[in-house]
Amino acid sequence: MSQRILFVCLGNICRSPAAEGVFRARAHHHAADSAGTSDWHVGEPPYGPMQRAARARGLDLSDLRARQFIAADFDRFDLIVGMDDGNIAKIEALRPAGNATPVRLLTDFAAQTGADHVPDPYYTRDFDGALDLIETAIDGLIAYLDA
Ligand code: 4NP
Image 1 (spheres, protein in one colour):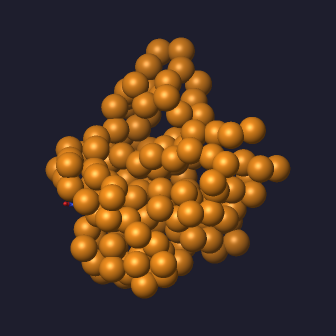
Image 2 (cartoon, helix red, strand yellow):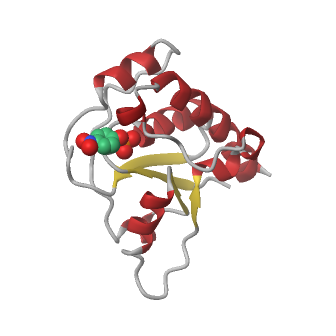
């Protein structure tokens, strides 16, 4: 069954657009979007260094534009996927009363890596490391959705 997945990070210019791009490229039968918990980069394309690291893997993120996560997203998606515990807390703070949409960490789908969050490459500058972890976790997420 086709599912609607929303990927969420802080700025929506590094981790969540990368996750959206990898997911779209690998899961044509599902729908995806991404958003940031902050409004810092609304309307901007993904961060240049992340776009370049993704393009080196054949992934074009240039059409994506940042937007802020809103409470209505709980009703528009079947699963919301955050990159770290800070994202999860900000997401949960907007959950409408009575809404039961699952919210998970992306790394929940990459248990074999031992990672408990996707480190923010905006700060670590390790864009390839973030993409490696995101690719592994997206494969796990797709296997979970299609099981
Ligand atoms: P992201 O990374 O949450 O993966 O998009 C960030 C991008 C920008 C900022 C923080 C995190 N910032 O402080 O502008």
